[in-house]
Length: 277
Image: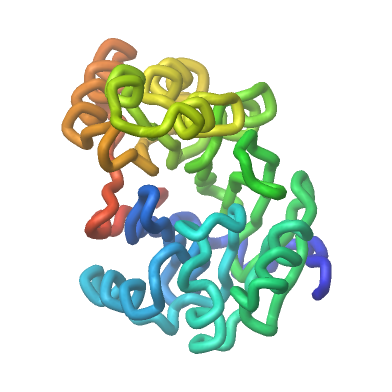
């Protein structure tokens, strides 16, 4: 295992001015987000099987070979299920925090090409600069990501119990924001789930509820923000239509009808969106 090193942008990389986002799916049964340009893709999490990942890429008209590297947010199954086979099949490196990579290595859940990064340390992957930051979630060493091509900035935080100061600072002012909106508080309280599970989800290192996610938009969305993706919705304690309605109302009240709003689901990918010029 090797630590990644920071690499400066090349002139070719600096010239890029857009990033395509394809959310292959998001939820408690699988998460995968592809950021890509014409011929270079970065897969953030591999929570679906290789077969399912290939099928979802096919639906989007994307060839698997565009994926050149795999970034892991944390070790939970819904983020790493297809990690080993996808990495081996494409012969690509996997990047994660030290604790995450070590855990996956002991479980034989990762390919042979593995690289470590520390939260807060920026590094370059192809055309993308990656900045991982620590998020409050009940995993070994979980992170969110700020990913940029030098012009466009994408923020990703799909598993976190709260938006603490660090998360708010990192996610503020992104051109596109992919943010967890996991559960409706009343639906979770009424759900037939064990009390310990409810407490875990509601805890500061659990999952972000709809109210907290939407309230944070007032601080996170800046003038340059044009895309908002709400993700990691609970299957039985949330509803995509409800989330979309609440978020649209929030954006309207903020006077931000210029923002494209999408709610990511578990069963199928969202159409590719290109952020930038």
